[in-house]
Image (cartoon, rainbow, N blue to C red; front, side, top):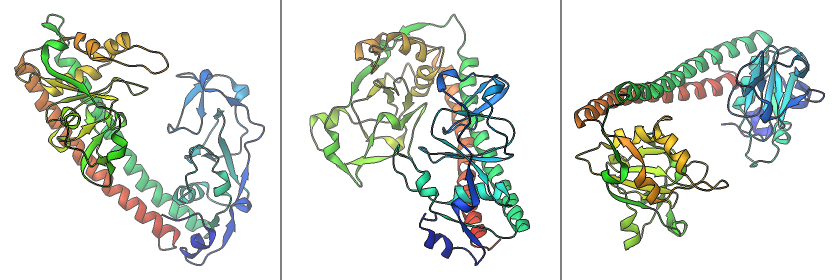
Length: 380
């Protein structure tokens, strides 16, 4: 990726006209009304655009809140560094958004792609517009700008399609669960009857952090029905009773039990076996002859299943939590093992499809990065 240092930025590009950021862009943020998050609607006439991850954060029906019409604009998240391209009427959400409009004759999509290409240093939750103002912007002839924008748009669209396919497959497995296990006549039992071990991690693991060694699983690593490998950290674990107690095995189920991430569950696959857990994560070790880990994980993550139980049982408002006694009292349907096995096979089939899409998305990400570098070196 490119650095913000203007000398390095210019050196990477085939000799074309460049101009300082402030000669290319005008900041048109001032004077526009801004809507606080508490006022966002789930649907409405006008989209609200803020500095968050979502393209549209919410909606409003109040026409008086519309941002001034400058044609297509680029939205920059001053705290988040997120960039968005916006056409048509919109409303600015909360603080921290910058509305950027070209001062010169230029293709806005080309400028948008270039700003996404620039590597803006992270300053935490501080302001980042000061870094953006330091860059030089390449300005090839307008027809070339349009050609570059079209190529990058097409490649980016392919990436979006893969992400949408993955999101669809995520929803598919939850739908399969609901369709297979909705029968009201199923046998019910307490979770405590199905577990032979429940524990959570201890404190003090920070002193064992290392560049390599055993995987250490935190609450942020436990996502719905999967332990995220992308955020892995490691520990040089001691050989003591505490470590042996908190070492996970294949077919355990992990459950986050404190804080804002409370209630996320994931089965432990062989790739995570032997890992250790933080104090915010609990190990649920099922009696595997009666319940499959994949079934238990999906039940705990179902909005009308485990999530409703967790919301009703958790204690504390500032920092919600669950204790082992509460976990053992969870009541859940226990379908026949054969039905659980059928569900597990279907989930495995969906996971194979997801892995193909993830591989293809990774290849598209590499292609897109290559196209960016070539485009802004003048090689397209």
